Length: 496
Ligand code: NDP
Image 1 (cartoon, rainbow, N blue to C red):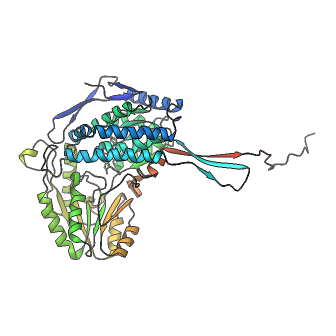
Image 2 (image 1 turned 60 degrees about the vertical axis):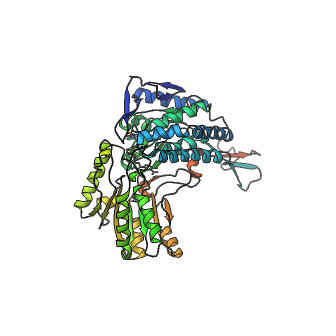
Image 3 (image 1 turned 90 degrees about the horizontal axis):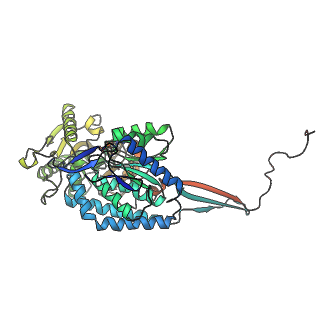
């Protein structure tokens, strides 16, 4: 087995020789065997990152030099796009074409941050004193743990690694144990591009085992995490003792509102995509449909018809439109979620179970599912399934649509459809989510900030803010005509 931990500029096996098989969600074959780090490997990686940061080996580079490095990594990613996409498709079970789109997005992320890095970050402050120069400068934050999920494995890691490199941080990457291969490939390219030893480190293994030190070691300054709400809460608690900076991208239960005055055909088509793309394993999936009562039947009947036709299939199936769930336990969780919804009074219109097609027998394929007659108190309306399950609620008034759209502890994203421009603007402004799509659902760009209101997270990735997360801000005040402060009296009374 190839050494797959990258610590202090060297590829290593786990210190106890431990390894872990990665299985394809499509047919359960073993697609890779990778090292499974021990606590001692994690501590070595933290030591390497801390030592490299404190040595100045990377922080001494200018923003322009680090941007050039990130740009070179983008070139290498582009060169290896198909190879990396194949690895990611093996790990996730998603179609190769989708994985190729994802890696193209990874390239775009690296290019965005490379371009951002060469912009001027520092500024002068006019303090109103001719003899004082006052400057705001930006410095690398320190050592960061970068922890990613399995749904868009390399993309979610890229949103962290690219700005961390531009900022000059040292870091330890931990991908999901289910999907490690693309992160391994990225680390090879980071090495090939000439990143100084110890700056970038890779740890593999289950979060419950290798995560503890990554989120609590006092030598870590920041944890940037994308994953579920529960894990995010665990990380917040662990970070308290040493007041680490946190960037958290958590779950979402994203409202998708269709008004009767919308282009209903376009809205239906987008609603199908929003809910069932990547079998709903998308943090911003539009799985909570909120539709104006007068068009409910037309919209829902058509969505059900379309859902019935969605073709499920594995990485190599050119006719497939979406793939399997990531694991058996996830499939079981989505099944329970639907059962609970039905028990609470939702009406199952389609799906609700594992695919029974013979070609899906060895994979974790779950049928596109629609639950109608849902109400706001139901578990299936409030909680994320992270599977292909759409819940449907109705509304009569604009105020009701807004209230439903905001009736969630999450606040990652939402969409609305209306041809009334003023109404669309009012609703977009009233919805408390980090991204709002008007007459669209799903697109994002690395140039625009991404992140959640409320319990969907803390901070923002991408955009300009996505770099700021990895920077400290320092104010340097220089008095060019030093003088006494004159605050306290300096007379000699009482000294004798
Ligand atoms: P998890 O929270 O289960 O895991 C995310 C990562 O955290 C994995 O690498 C996992 O490791 C690791 N981890 C688990 N426990 C710990 C711990 N105690 N300490 C440190 N690390 C730990 O999420 P999923 O991987 O299941 O991803 C799905 C979730 O991610 C959904 O809720 C989804 O909404 C959210 N998400 C949010 C996005 C956003 O932009 N807001 C984007 C994508 C997903 P391992 O798996 O190896 O155990």
